[in-house]
Image 1 (spheres, rainbow, N blue to C red):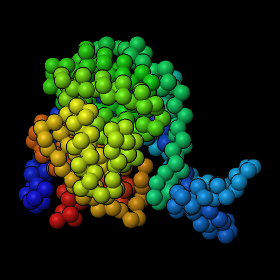
Image 2: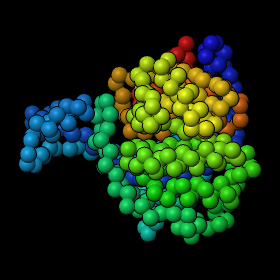
Image 3: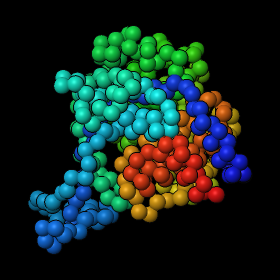
Image 4: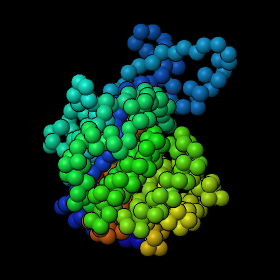
Length: 367
């Protein structure tokens, strides 16, 4: 952004009235977050593993046999793309429709109860539980997601009903879907949503694939081919973090770089090869994006050296970016990336998503 102050004013005007309909789905998970103790001095004093590599080394150095260490509960909270991104959207003034795995037999899990306030939540299955071990520089995520393995289009229609799906996916500006990596029937669900609801109504589809290492290269290439076909009728945005980008770019014969300028060049190349409307990548140091309209932008990020929370940082970037997309072409690519970066930076520093006033104040720190 050549004129940052002017862009901030433009963004502030946009968020005075970010009208539009955003629907998010189809995952859902309860995050049980822990810290791992490195050593304990006495009942009240202990030292935590701050660096993930130090914990990994501790496990490695144990060699053969068992490894045991004490853990401390940090929080139990809603997690996953749908809830985390939805929370960020809601804090920025949106009213997202959320469709995901929030509870079934015993009703909505208490972790998701706050999303019931506006009555725009559709639950499709029991909420899986994810054990997260959080460090200052990253997190170890161990989900149990058996519920997702057989979840398909037929199940979705049976549980939500046709009228429910019509309510969620008609006259919608942006549809955000996650996580491809943990849903084997993702392609089928996507195709049916486009066929029955999204084609011809001016919607944008936004994807967070999550950890693509969990699926084969062949599965990824099949999905990308499907997305490229559907992109002719529904514009697509794919959002990646630096680890996901490194894998995808390697399939294209490129290496995702820590250098923002080089990363931007390779993002332009990869977007052109994929044939999607937008490709964006967010890292702790910068965000880059390239579009079919020949837009290419690099927006630097001020890394937080003492994060309060890291779990959900990528989802908050997505929430900021999604909300900035509701009014088509109202904000430039650079401005949308800047919003995503700013929402992320506030979130990791404070432990919660920013509202519009927080966003305005946080953007001023970049001037």
